[in-house]
Amino acid sequence: MSRKLRIGALASGGGTNLQAIIDRCQDGSLPAEIVLVISNNQDAGALERANRAGISTLCIDHRRHASREEFDRAVVGALQEAKVDLVILAGFMRIISEIFVEAFPNRIMNIHPALLPAFPGLHVQRKALEYGVRFSGCTVHFVDIGTDTGPIIIQAVVPVLDADTEATLSARILEQEHKIYPRAIQLFAEGRLRVEGRRVSIDPPDDRCPPSLVNPAIH
Ligand code: GRF
Image (cartoon, rainbow, N blue to C red; front, side, top):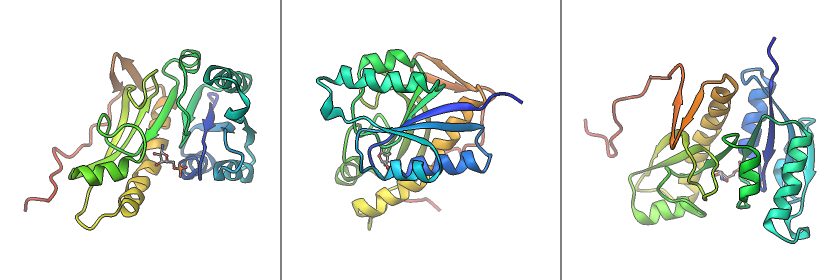
């Protein structure tokens, strides 16, 4: 049997994405194991979820480090010591530096609750509503040195409804996040992701897309 992919996860918040991935590792549908969860926030729900699942945790407080680079060196050191193959950012509220990206080239993934390159950064569900887009969604991408700019692996489209509030739109997007993040990790674990420049191809491909999505639907 081939060795399971070793994942290191970074999270600052509640950790529902982390939980979705833990669940898929535990039920055996994802050939991977989360070996370490790191947070910069000791109160992160993600740490509690990891503890409950018997995963090692580490809190590295960014306020105790003089610079972003110094904090990143501590995080990278812990991830290397844990011999992780892939790093996943799951609601990690820190911008990571070049030191981190260079330590794990094309081996760091992030989930973002919008259809990149639209609405990078923070509070993006609110921004999508305010802008009046008909579709938003979520994106799993490899991390490069920009913010939310790396090569895109998977996106899910979520229609924006007239009655939506920031909370209802966020909840529908989150539901899709919980599906596409484990899937992107699975493709990585299966060795099916090829990165060329900005484009990520999936080999062999997953070609079951509808030809288009229209909102409001035309009947
Ligand atoms: C998600 O919306 C994710 O896209 C964003 O931060 C949120 C984290 O949620 N990066 P959770 O902690 O996984 O519940």
